[in-house]
Image 1 (cartoon, rainbow, N blue to C red):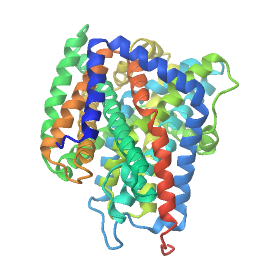
Image 2: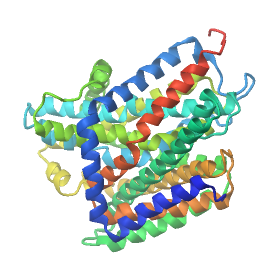
Image 3: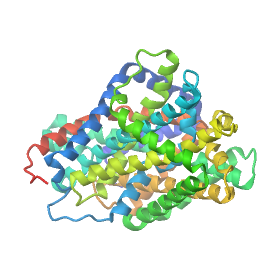
Length: 497
């Protein structure tokens, strides 16, 4: 690994966060909560405006004449099959979160909304809000970031770095070099901290799954750390092999398990209730997604305002935290695809799958609450990491489905670490599309340390806040990258298609 000033600074910052978190976990969480609260209170409108602008720009690019432009030379062909391509980008982007929040998030929103609305209307609105958090806006953030990197990298021959478009468009001078350097630094920090949170979330869920599978109780931190250690050992091998052999195999396996689990719940659960929920959710989402993207809840009471900050704003910033590494990773695997194909694949397909996923798992949760009066809301209040396993315990073969969730969650964590270490390796080597195993393993160690910090926090809320702190500055960088893309596209003369 080249000991450049950028890497030394990035490692110093991420290392300091890791040490602080290990020594004083509560202090780090409180500091993050304080700073994030200030930013959310004063800049909520800007965050929502920015993410809505990103989505609208993505739609316009896909429909415009620029959609025919290839990410690469005109005769380049895709490196990966469409199935592997979608599996890889999906597993890198959200796999762990979907497993964790599939039932838990809709029911969490329901707990608040039902204080103001009829229970069934509350369920519908809770599912809409969940789909909003995981849908078009999130994937547009990923897509546009990845599109900028892929376009400048494969078509214009720039390094696969966040700074490359800025320097290419605005020239090489002291100011642009400084902005570019800062952009790469912020990207590295956001990647590392964001991925640390993902590791913690996945480990928490795997731990709950193991408890449920073997009937364990009060296993505490010991089992959690044991699972974490196994995780660290598991991602060593994928980091030492070629991307197409390591990441593609793991991603396809994880998506196959998750997809099979979703179909199982759909077929063996209250199918009519679930399908009705899915169809309604699609319609309500399509009808309200764009307008909801401009809602800031300015005129609502403090309880709703706090919810908006804790969930919607946190999610939007969360996706921005992951945008550097997911975007760059998606760019790396998308050479040879057109802009239109890229945006449709990255935005529409995962969004549709997310709506199906929450439609299945969210509807099952609401069925248990509204039709069977199961104590599932108590589980949501007391142990959100165990909600998925409580739901599965109501179906045939609970041991098999619980094991499937544990396996899928574990694989999704591994794929996230592998993809993040790969992207950090690219940054570490000046944009090298195939960084060495030594470089990737070095970043794997750093990511593991930050994941340990998040695990020691013991709180999903603390994890979300720390991720938001690392990501907030990157919202400005993403907007600069979009400007760079639009300026360069104006120089293209694509053929209409």
